[in-house]
Length: 67
Image (cartoon, rainbow, N blue to C red):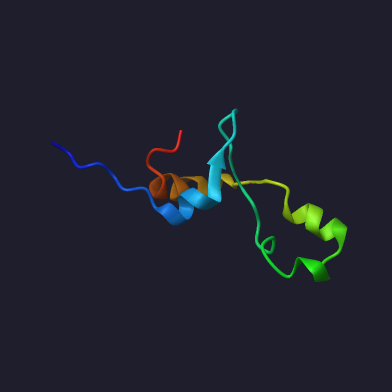
């Protein structure tokens, strides 16, 4: 019997899949020191970004059960 593959928990917290199958993530800089940043910059931080196709293979290896 084969062992289950382990999911990398650090990657699982950072990436998710949309309904259409794209892998999205939040960029850096959205977690602290927000009082110094302008509202326009903060809005940009909290938009989901699409993962590039060249990085997709690496993320699939880290998250084997990602749909």
